[in-house]
Image 1 (cartoon, rainbow, N blue to C red):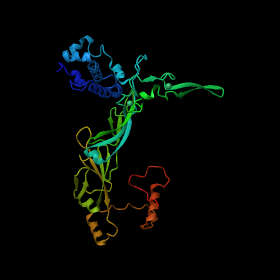
Image 2: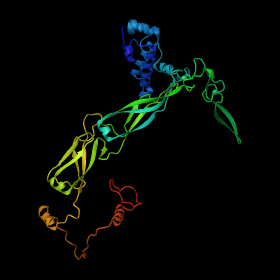
Image 3: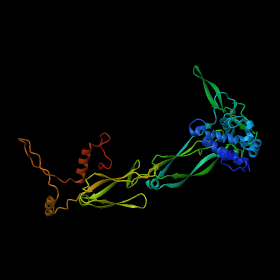
Length: 406
Ligand SMILES: [Zn+2]
Ligand SMILES: [Zn+2]
């Protein structure tokens, strides 16, 4: 048992781990905590990982550490000193940079992020869900470790000097134009591998395609458009840091509820008697509950009125509470068949009296007119006119109000 295990802990490995396991652990963590990924200066964690790998990947240093702990390394001057800097170690490990280019170390390129939409229901966002998503991705060929061929068989192309392209001059009328052409000898690769030494496993492509299944955790309360990032799960390529796989939640429209932030909106149709005299409505929620809403007698719900049921909206993602549920009421009035004049006269005695008409202006000419029932065609035309014509500017068409078009 080693004297200290801090460096092993930094790499999240067992003190008895093999070199290969060490390498794998460093690879995973270095990619995760690389400053390019964390969007900032070299983090403490990245330095810690780099230092741990710098020590443990060297058999003599590892032995000294196992025997004497950090004190056994004091000749090296402690973290960050003596060994490679975290950045150098990283590019050394990932094969980027090439070394000695001068100036700021350029480091490895970063691969593209890949974005996938994921359709979810409002129920998924209410209750939370774990879903599996399979995708194809390139990984470094495990047989040749991304070299494309046997050790030493990969040679820089002499024709293009490893650039992969050649600069040619071409006469364009009176002018000479410089054009870049892919190098024919190496087919733009910048390096040449003898056919017999090519890696058979990846066909010298350096990468192979694998199917990767990602487990996407949809937390309660997540919203439409929410991004779930899988660090470094993008395509791998030699000398590059793989990009991320970004899953973007795409909420399907819901048949009952509309969501706004953490609140839910629900349209309830009630009849006139319930609006005036009270009653109950049922709202099936997003889990298996049915809310039974009590409308009190005399509460008098008006058309379009908005009422709240506190705490029955969506769960909030961070804090463990809930938004509100807002119910907008639509009142269904009795149809015109309901015309028992005796009853109607009775209503006059019950309902508050109608306000008196304003006095007519002096000398006004009075003409009595009556209302006409329209047929559906007339009605559609009238509604279109009411909305401001068919080719009119946008807006004005409130949600839920649609012109009948035929
Ligand atoms: Zn290969
Ligand atoms: Zn070439």
